[in-house]
Length: 394
Image (cartoon, rainbow, N blue to C red; front, side, top):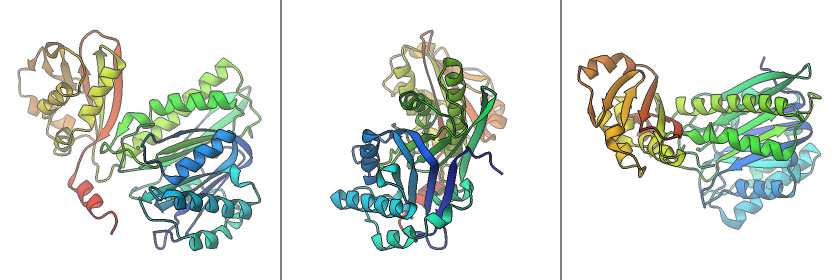
């Protein structure tokens, strides 16, 4: 059984929003009010649940949980979509006996269609009864769209002789290129925290996890990560030592989840970690990791297990980053293939053949002696990705 943080209940339901014969609505509820930290998409087309969620959190960072539907994004639906989102919260809150402002909405799926509110009304009547069993795996399955498997990660630390737990879940396989990836993430923690610090900690952890992956270069209208902390462990994290330990655990859970997204990339077979150091700035290093990680030429070579280093240095060269090409060094794992402006002599294809057969492939790029550094995880690009997205709405 999963080590669920104290004071949380999970549930899932088959509402029939889009999928037939499977759960497509998940509920996460804390028994007591919880501090909520959040990050949302920067896409200018922000889905109704993002807009409504921001409004709720602007009033108070103390809530009870989240309700998440899959299949319909409720994005680009105008004022009507906002009204539908608010009504769905009212229906859920009434059934659960709480205030609508205590629930945060999230949606994922096809952009454009409006909710069928009759289906929301029908499922709302079942919400309270569905909270009897704690089963986060079912909740994680309910929020999936093109995901091949549910994504959960967890861990615990000791503080003041007591156990503090974190459990996170997320969904995402395509439309992934974070700017806060289609991705949703929900994290539960039973520590007591100061809301402002919790928000800062989540932001730092997201920048090193969900914001450091790419599948296809697309940022969604619905990207959301929310972290709850309800204090049910009876541990209040209020000193630097405990804050450092809890943030390290939060980062570990976020990085496990974000790795799973790249691992589960639509049609994906490889996970490429691009590590750029020696840049003039972190911003320059990030330009290069994203140019390489989002390059269709690099990604298709990765799928074909072809160590085509020329595509990588070409991507670095067009990234917009400032560097001296004569100082760039490129290696696949520990094998250097390019340095001082030219390829290393030898049968590189033979040397790299076993490296390229692996699922996880590390690409290291050194630009010079600057302090700039950035790391990005990226998937390959396959025929199956094209097939999935060509038929997504059918």
